[in-house]
Length: 589
Image (cartoon, rainbow, N blue to C red; front, side, top):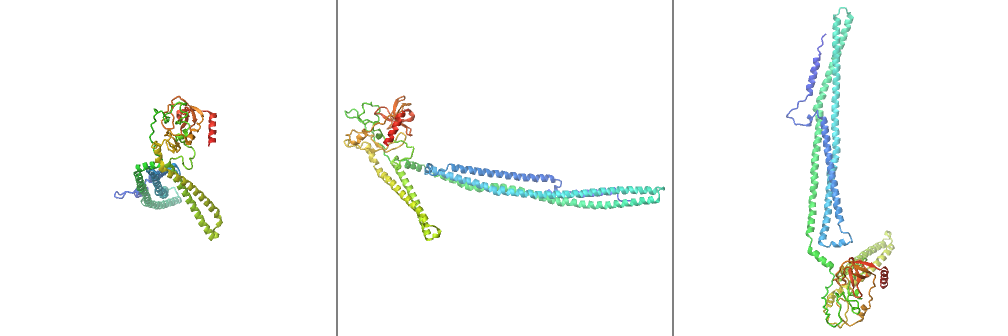
């Protein structure tokens, strides 16, 4: 019995399977990722790289938002740092147009900072937040697609293993059938073998032949199944999976492009507002009025004083009692005892010298020039009136509340507000008394201001012809070496007049006691009224130490005393004399 199944059939079947596996790409087809059947691992690496690029861009935008927030915070802190403090001197300075323009600039910079915060917020919500969620979705989708691809590959590998096993079994059965056939033919040709043995060999050959036929059928079926699975794998499953991966990657690319456009659009949206901020800064700068600021300086610092009159010429050639001028600082001690000289006993009355008070000034602001005093008093009256109005508003509100409680006792006790109403009434009465007091001082100042011109005329010597009349001391305001003012009595222009009780009051004033000595470190030319000239190395007496204004009062002899800069002398105070002087001051006060 001859078998028609040979090894040639197996080789032929394998060649047919190989031709079915190979796919020939049509050049006219659109190039897609479905042709990358053998690039599964490379596509996996590429898509992971794409996700890394997206995460890197998210990190970039996040750092940009942090920079915008930090910049906005620094701008706000800068604007806040230079804002005027409430109830401070800086707040008063902002009445000038230049400082108001600066304040407007600070406010606009605050709005400018707000726009950078808007940039940060929009980038966080529109880019960082959206892309972060998209990346999570993208990772899940990528994981699903490559899981399906691996699953399809594993299934194809399983089918291939089944095909290999079926092929090896078919090959083994064919070899066993050949050996059984050869053994049967050998036994049939041997005359010494019994008929039973030949029959047994024949049956064995038939059995092996049948097994080979069954293996062939199984191998053929398995081969057809594998070819079908392989065809579906390379032409259906894998192309579909790769197409999904391609679509996913293209969406990622489109999404990052849209995010970059949003990145630019967020900046572009705030440009008009930032431009308005800059326009407002420019407008504020253009509103600066130098003439107006100069006028404000005049209004702030004008004192209401008239300039002093001309100094009278004193003729020393006449046989009359000479009047000592402010420049005669070198007269001897014995010659001037009986004459009212500058810097002598009446020093405190001759020159209006005021010390800078380190503490609070007088309540009536009498230490200020008339015009500035008037402004301070008016300001104080306005403040008190505001306080009165505030207290009256509170009283009215409590009165209405009391009426409500009276009509509706369940809402509250009407007697509970009586104590507060009494307090408010007392406060209002006190404030009104304060207003009356300051209004009295204000009326006094406003009533005296028109007489300033007359006072200046009298000091300028226009009434010199009335030399027989009593010279009344007038309130002459002068500027001291340190730039402060006072309204003390002035006898700057002295004339020879009959002695009066008024003059005796000055003559009877005792000179200030000596509290130490000093050495002049430098030469000082005392050209201003109230000062005294000293030479370098000269030793003098100290009669009043520096009160904080930078001036020390010294004496050369009984008739020569005045002020010199503290930095020009080295003072040696006598402790006992200083303590006695302080005690004398306390007693006099």
